[in-house]
Amino acid sequence: MNLISLGEVLWDVVGEAEHLGGAPLNFATHAAKLGHGSYLVSAVGTDERGKRALNQIRALGMSTEYIRSLPDHATGHVTVTLHDGGQPCFTFHRPAAYDFAELASSQLEQLALTAPDWIYFGTLAQTSSIVRSTTALLIEAVPSAKCFYDVNLRIGCYNREVVLDLLSSATVTKLNDLEIGMLENLLGDIHHKSLADFCRKYAWRFGWEAVCVTRGDKGCSLLLGADYTTLLIGSAPSLPVVWARCRHGVSTNSSPFRGNLFHEIQLFRHDAAPSHVGHCMHAGLGHLQPCVRYIRGLRSRRSIRPPGTLG
Image 1: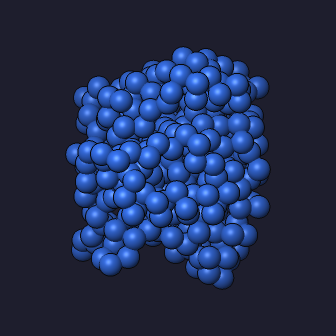
Image 2: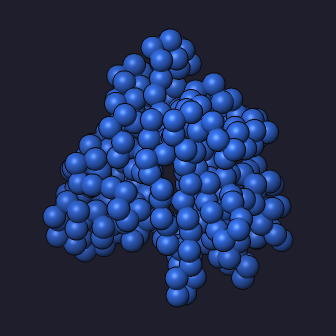
Image 3: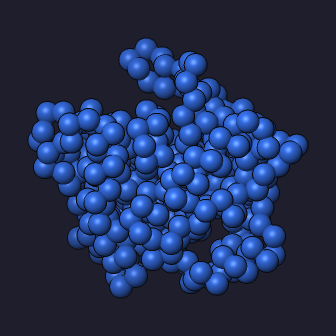
């Protein structure tokens, strides 16, 4: 399976520490470790952070062929502070290099020749008109590819027009339970009676083949065609803590904040938690195949039916 991930490469700055992240990078890296063809489209500066980012990405086995190095723009970074209860607050410093991710016509042709099965994008970088244009050109160049939208809303980094466009472009959408209310408010919708109600109505409205709602230590809910199910975290006492940490970062134990669907779903299928985070990030990759099979299965499933017929 081949996929293209498009969006931000940035550094989480937490006090004196810096952790390489960005959901598109996380997604691309984990997919590559599963043995899939994974291509990341982004941009960094020619500054010290940009050089470190490229070196770390290469060390993770990823190609940097489609990551621009821009002398006039700083590599992306976000300042992370913790509020009461340990909840992170993100301050994104923009414009950043990833806001200028573009592809030369020859690069677009090269990526089209890989015949990607999936194109992945989030919301943050898509608020840049340049990135939106790059994404549109990519989707047009490979119309057979399915689109995976990782909603991931950050305060001050989204708007109604962009989110509506991305929701409409998606084949599969992933969001968390808090983002449901944010979407409902953003789109002026009434609040839905249940997660199942939201999933079914939004899937029908936007033509999604599947939707995943992550719910913290309560697991996640999945709608695939007509089938709706809830997957719960395993019973091991340490699993919620390990899950909360392992769902973030770039395939090392690098960042305690940034999310990734593959890690979220695979941990719902664990019966026992690894003893520590680093072990989970390394050995846990072998348990992601159920999620990959689930995603592949979309290709052979029927289109969704109207809400009233979804069982």
